[in-house]
Length: 307
Ligand code: ATP
Image (tube, rainbow, N blue to C red):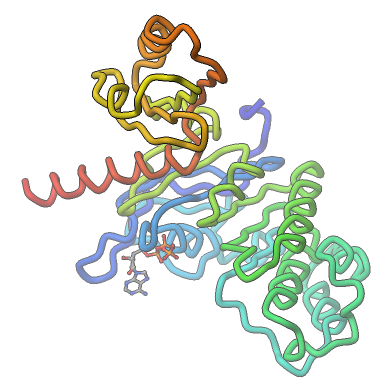
């Protein structure tokens, strides 16, 4: 499936250094149409730098950066993208409808103001000046501005910060609609459930390197630990001492056990407690997988620095 999707933007061996800081240490990344790529990573990992390169806001020290096969500063390439950055500032006195009309005027085949406003859930705010919008409403308008040009590739940098749950879900639905229409989306977020809900592909960045890339399922599967829940008469302390158990906590009625050997553990639990019930085995959630990967990347960086 992935091979059929056109590559819209690409980083190859992209490096960026700020003084003594290696913001990006030579990364390869491809963005494709009809696919949502979530870029995850702790603060300072290099996500914004990667997006800045693809948008032509900063230049790479080495490697290549392509947007629709061109230099990212090429005007025709730029007319095919929509952008919602973290620090977007729009003219405070212009009204929502005016801002959308202005943004649409830069593009060759934009959406109507009504359609963009509807997708972003701000149809009732068209006459309101930007400065009179709440923080969450401003974010929704910034999203509408990003999509009004009918972009083929949409860059969303932490789009749902400051949004309430309803607004966030409305935005998720709009993003899904755009992806289904063939738009490529690159999303940076610190909300792992957001990546889990939306992403076709997840790329984890740490210390300027890509430490993992693949589907949410593949990322989870990379992390060896599974979780085993059960209701048991066995005491927590006894189970916690078994070599198959990496971590044991009481979770309401059930024990929650982390293990790298789920089959061995389940066999032992069933053998030692004939009354055991409510058994459940689960792979790691994205949050656990992410923490484990970035911890491993921290350790690798410390090792490189010490060498
Ligand atoms: P966050 O999640 O906090 O937004 P990020 O993954 O987007 O982080 P970047 O903003 O790309 O991270 O920063 C990567 C590294 O480069 C950080 O160490 C940051 O301090 C550094 N850096 C970024 N921009 C500059 C700059 N203009 N001058 C100096 N250092 C910079």
